[in-house]
Image 1 (cartoon, rainbow, N blue to C red):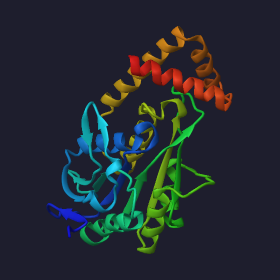
Image 2: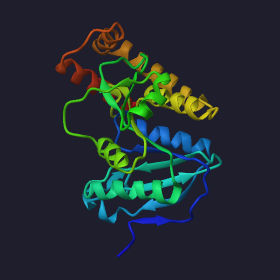
Image 3: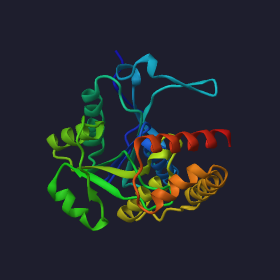
Amino acid sequence: MKKPVKLVFTPEFKDPSMIAGWQESAGDVGQKVVSYLNRHIQGQIFGEIEPDSYFHLGGVRVENNIAVFPASNFYTGHSNELVLLDSNQPQIEIYDFLERVLDVGEHFLRVKEIYTINSIASQVAHTGQRKLMAVFNQAEFQKRLRTYGMEGLTWEGPPSIDSYLLWLAEKRDIPAVSIWPEVAFYLSQIGDPRAARAILAFFDQRFGLNLDYSDIDREIQEQDEALATLAKEQPEAGNFIRTLEIGIGMSDDEQLRLSEAVNSFIEKA
């Protein structure tokens, strides 16, 4: 039987933090943030969690006639402070998968803290500021991050994978936080670069990374221009967006119509 965790090499760290981003987060936030950080630190894979035990074959998706298989890769780079996990969310044996993540963090790397990135769809306009909401597994860790302006998240519903990870990390006495930026609901499927930038700014400040935002700022500008064109060509969509910009909520039917208009327009463009 394959070992669930395959390490190419064990990097040497002084006092590292782990950042985990999920490919499935709304607005493509988790994947975008981890990819951006990975380019910044010039990351390379040092380990992976073998997918066989945690994903169904039906989880394989096809993009442009190419099969895209689930993956969970650990990266390190020129910064000796960051470990990055770029991963799909496991479909089965979720607890065992998260225990493997924590095994790598605790036993091989001795991480001091863990950050997970997810997102939450919100009735915020794409031009608006994104709030960062957070859930902590330790009160002391929450106090250490109180100056960063993250709000507490109130949620009623089934627990997320992040909740499980925070719980299991607490059992190992590892401080952990799950960060949830607002994503404009009509960008949930096509990507919300402003939400990703908000998290990048937090990590930049937290770890003194001196990030170059030019690429993501360009993406934001291009998206703004595309949606401005949509607003001119489709008055109803434009009215919906202006409604959000002045802070007025929308009905479920209106949200659906705006989302369909945006997705169709961007796909054709």
